[in-house]
Length: 42
Image 1 (cartoon, one colour):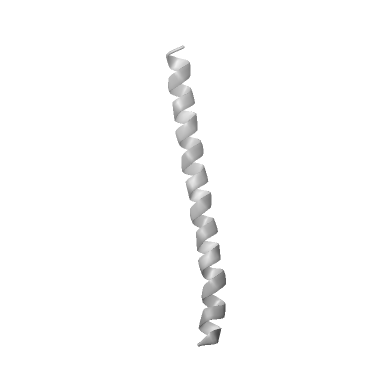
Image 2 (cartoon, rainbow, N blue to C red):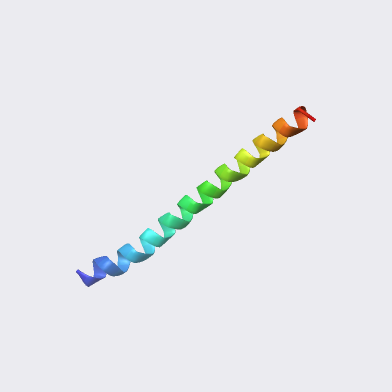
């Protein structure tokens, strides 16, 4: 049982990092899209 807990901790951490990386990329793409729209209307 404790081995399962030891393995589940790092896996949860790594999947969380992957999710945050995806969120960062999505946020960056949204910012670039907004910037492009702002430049079109300048």
